[in-house]
Length: 555
Image 1 (cartoon, rainbow, N blue to C red):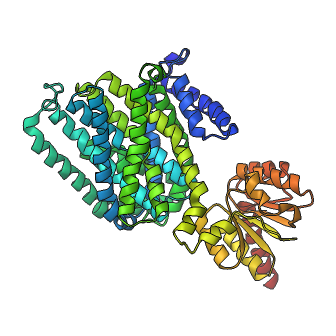
Image 2: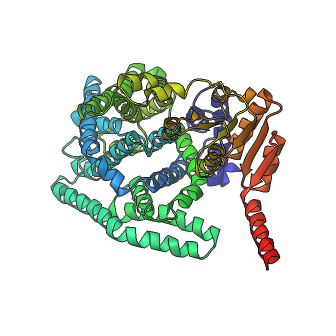
Image 3: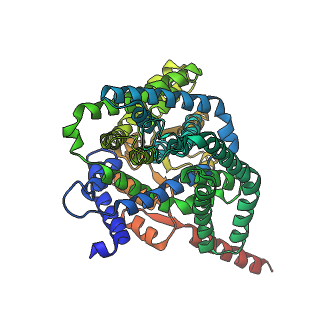
């Protein structure tokens, strides 16, 4: 029966297995990405049992890339992009050149011709959009200086790969591939046409998109329909991405990124980001499942040394080149480590390049398999690199003489307060609650996962702990057993439920107040032990009724 509905089968079985293996990976203290990749291997053609439609899975994963890049663009302005051009452009170009040369050297060692080595090296030089952004988002680094450099670097890489995809067919003959596929006599025409299309797209988005897209979204928001607004956001993301690819030859990811940057100029950008988040996460999972489907585990046994060589080029060679380049531009060691870890993996563009090289006769089948193996292994290792940097961060701050070094240490030490209030989350709601408590002179401790907010609070002389309060280790730093009240101001009900459960076990008399967005969330949080759950809609209704009754009594 599943074979009669390949799309439904690919989505449903992919999600179910991703959930099972992702939860298992998390249980084993590993990144859920590992579970998603294993889910793909299980539904791929190289393992027994159900085999999902790889073509459909790949297209579904592209939707995830589009939505993810759109979300990044919503938090990334043209000003941010231009602010990092001095390092992102030369850095990305030099890093691509170094990684390509390393790949060509490895190909030469395996006896491949220069043309095969060039395609192989290019495929190993470009990082995965999804993996990089997931790592930055998990650490709230997308809007930091390091995050802006990494994203800008990625954009330059994508532009270079777009040019490579267009020019490779024209160069196939001279490089030793299928002469019928190559049209070297039109090389310069193809180059100029590609550059012209990219330039036309950028100009159109800057001068046309910045006016039309925010205007259109404002009109849709004025209709008062939430469904139409969500539909408009998705239509902008998908429509611009598809149009940029169909009309200008720009990748889906780049088109979606520019659409998000343009929409960033609108006052509705935050709501657009919130509305697209669930679909972005869901389709990003399908991306990792589709990558796992392409992987043939047998290559680990048949070609162990070439696989090791590819892995070292990606994780060691490419990242080391980026590390040296960033330091050469006089950026801090912590920035160099973050950028090098961000780029120490490969993904979607690598698969496209390898597939094109195979079609043009420029890359042997072994090369295609090695690129896939390198992608899987580098994606598996990438979270470990970031974990190592997280552990080194306090030492890095001390080494760089950062004025925030003591703040990092303070953020990791337990407090000795008694009868204090613990406030989890210092965003739009939490900051208002905190300001009221500070004004009233109530002893307060804030738990926040944004390093910048924690630093700012500590500069003001307040107690603040850096991390996710859903983790027992972080909550232990708050001296919750001696606290009088716990206020949970974060919007994530599932995470809030975990915090409530941990806190209630430590302090049975603790008064716990949380926020919710629906009746179901209210019930959920009360079941986990919350004393009071406040829902925004209810409080708004009560406030309106109270004001009306007060006005009538005065009249």
